[in-house]
Structure formats: C-alpha cells, structure tokens
Length: 219
Image (cartoon, rainbow, N blue to C red; front, side, top):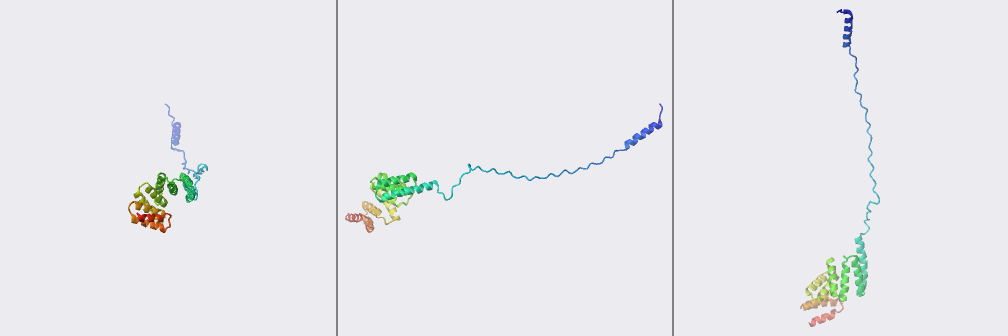
C-alpha cells in the first residue's frame, strides 16, 4: 500500500477544518404579536312589544264594571222609591226587582221591595226581602221597622220587639215604629210601655196614634 502523505494529509486537514467551522446562525427574535383592536359590541336592540298584545290599562278615573252596575242599580231603585212614595206598590216592586237584578247587593232595593210587599199584605213574600236587606246592611232603618211589623203579624212578638228596639235606638222619631212597638208591648202585657210609645207617636202627629193611645188606656 502506497501512503500518499501529502495528499491525504491535505484532505484530512481540510476535513477537520470544515468540522470546526460552524455556520453562523443569527438568532431569530420573537416578534410581538400585533395588538388586537377591541371592537365595541353594541347591545342587541330589545324587541318592541306588539301593540295588539300589550294589555290596555284602565284609567284610574274610569269606574269598574261593579261600580257601574251599582250606580245603574241605584238609578233604577230611585224609580221604585218614587212609586213607593205615591203608594203605587206594584210599579215599585217592579222597579226594585229590576234594581236587584242589576246589583244584588243593593240593600235599599231589597228593603223597598219588602216594604211594598208588606203594604200589599204579602207578609210571607216581604220577610225574605227584609232579611236580605238587613244581612247586607244591619242598620237599615226601614228594613228593621218593616221586619218588626212582619214578625208581629206572624206572631213573633219577641223578634218584632227586638227589631223595633234596634230601629228606635237608631232613629227614635219614627211614629210608625213607635206605634208598632206600642202594639207589641200591649200584646205582651206591658200597658205602661205601650202608652208611652203611643204618646210619643201622638206628639209626632202620626196618623192613628191618637186612637191607639185611647184604646191602650182602656185596656
């Protein structure tokens, strides 16, 4: 084997030199990421309510259906009161019935109809109307007096006396009630109480009171 010292040595030196030379690599700096521009997000518009679905508010000054019915009932009841004042009992009953049909809580209409029935001699028909009037309005003066009269006609002297007492405690100047209570007292044996009631009715110039007082004194 022939050793070529110079040739091989030159190649070897060159190879070693090549191994030692490293290519210069420039470090790559991380570039900053471009800033992201914040976009202002506008809120989504609220959906508009459909006019057809929006409930219509009632004006505070507008009466309710119940208030309208009550007002209408009173207007019809007053027609009954006018007929009652003329002693037209049947027309009065008709108007009172119409008023009750409109508003069953109209105590004055119940009392008026009961009173008109009583004056027609329909005690059985009058009593339930007067009971209802007093249930709706315990201090209804007309109903108390007329129910006292109905009870007296039915022989319920204790019930009649209770109604007359309550009525006269609230309004003592009622000649009809005084005569009614005087009659009940006389039937119960209270002659002195009866004379007192009839005497007060005479002072009030209630028709028939003088004759009732005269009869009580004879009893």
